[in-house]
Image (tube, rainbow, N blue to C red):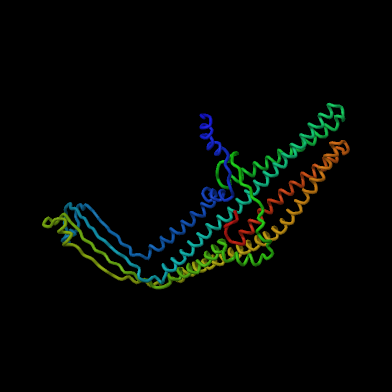
Length: 436
């Protein structure tokens, strides 16, 4: 009974000894840990903060001032405005307010520009995540493919080892000569070399994936398998997919919003050519120690004064300053338009390539699968002949090598097909729903 209780207590520990990560879980880790995505998030936060800063400039500016001084020697008494020659203290407090009334709609256009830049940064954050997710998916599929290739290499080594054991027994019994044993061992050595290469490729792929999601490599972590999706239809119209993608992809929306922002930048610069009007007011009071008849608060009450005024500023030669700035902003707008055109081109070409690759990978996967079935049957015949002493070692080695190559091709074709299916599904939808 005690042993049963101990076993039940240790089961959770054994369960945690080896964990399995799915593609969706890897994406969650990517969002949490990937520094490139974090940079995109920080840029979006910076754009939001910049917009709040611009909006604050349209609010009234209120300030409170306080002065304290000690006057020595000949000076003017602040209370009586007469010359005195003595040491006295002076204290003044005041408050002021300034309200922008009209600035040629400069702040309003800056706010519109900041709003577009903020929305562009948010879309760019999503675009960065999508780009990193594509790279993650490629790395994830590569791990699965190299793992399958490693399994195939292990099977080849196991098959050759069994042949070495069988031939060794025949040599010991004097049925066949030792030269056949040496040839079989040579085949085993070749298979072990391929096994080491496959193991190294698998470890390299795992390390790259762990680095992508920015966690420490763990040999105990396994990755959930992916299989081809039979429900996804064959793609045959890249133009239609591209036209739909133009409406939803954040890369394009971000570039378009960024381009639009320069129109408002030009307007805000041109606003410096127009007159500006502002309203201001202040209130002030002071205390001087030279007046012994009134205490501190009575002096403040007796000396309080204030003013209110309107300020008008008319630029005379402002266009000479603003014209180069406007020209530069318009060049920046054309650069943004070119960036948008490049982004459109890259997306269209990526979709065209994905459509072409999906159809090609589907055919390649089917052909590779059929090739494996055919060569598996052929190898079984050669192996049985070798066991019966009818076939020679060269026929066996050739059949085994052809089968190993076909298996590797089928594995690679399978995972290339899996990758292209999910990539094109993402292009069709414009999001990752159901892709993982």
